[in-house]
Image 1 (tube, rainbow, N blue to C red):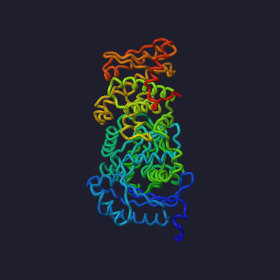
Image 2 (cartoon, one colour):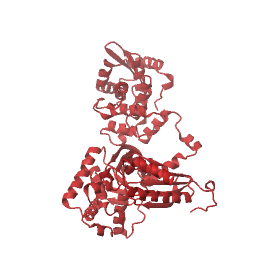
Image 3 (cartoon, helix red, strand yellow):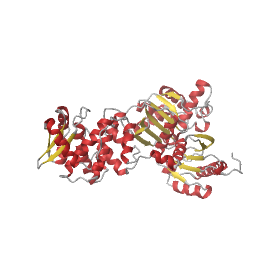
Image 4 (cartoon, rainbow, N blue to C red):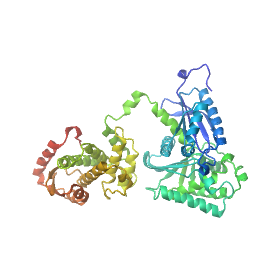
Length: 545
């Protein structure tokens, strides 16, 4: 603890984070280093079972709340003793779902002086990912970052540091134990019922995984206790679990041993916290079934999990303004290009498609009612339309949608990001349809805008089919029933014309016109290019790199 005579101003930056979970409450106190990392000064954990019987009654029990109040008061006293600059408290699924969750938060504020932030499942997943990226080397690997609590499980599918999908599932260890059993020996019938319940939830919430992660990075008591048992059996010690690796087959084998072991003998197992012995079977079952569902063999432990992510987010928020300014994009297209580079997207091709798409938009806007903001949405979508290759070539347009949704695009509103993601989603293959959830949730005007822009980006993408930027410019001559696309190119762009025609079906339907792609020879290229240059708005002009 700190010397009482020392003031907070005399100390290095100290922060504390408290995580109120369904099963336990955890506190960590840390000192921030100059490089933005931190070292842990103190940790405290109390298994208060706040969510006990919640999933049957729908309410937090009085005795569980009383235990939690006492634990929180003690943790606040510890943090105060270290004279932390900030103490942040978050609560997860138990408080989030309980009918008296808000009343619990009010009582904690009255009795302990703590303000509780009840975070969403998506926020839990983001914090777990932030911790995993700092503590585990994920470079060049696709990963599933998984945090299992008492009430819920968060799964983040990511390629390196880029999020593709984020799921919150009602598969917490306490919830499953209370629903399906496992505290005592789990017989064949109950085991099958538990297994079917988990698989049904995975099918309903995740479905067919968009890709097979190379590794699962697991946080939460279930993961650390399974690793503790296996590491003790292997090495005689459960210490230093950070980065500890387990194979799926090991977890499955351990699961079947645990479910056949009576509770009193489980409590005596080396490496297993006796207070977690009653819920470990359900937790292990979730890990094993999820790894099977995702097709992943390796599981790596990240004990810090949510608390580590919370500390890192607090540190990021305290970045000196001068430092923040040096990394902030000068304009919002910089953040788009930075994300495209992060996804290793084909920069020259995407820049060129963005330029051609802008020229098509300018030519068509004179004859069709498209809002001017559509040009910037279209440009951003074109710059990002191939980011899905980071996950897989197959269905890369769908991967692009999810990657863009989870990208941090500075300067863009949530609505604009959703529009950009939709346009990138429809740059190939399926046309926008109301039965697609991502399209259906847009309002009527935005759906029409997405149709326009998707039709344009398909044609622009076709005009650089060979990725050689052969078509240097495109002019639009719109008539009553037909639209001529005059292409500027030094030689006949046969492949580009063929691919643009092939991809123009949506264009014909949306703009109610038949497009014709015309090359007037090398002599006509300069004329077409000058015509486009006169029409292009100077403030949005893009230069192909």
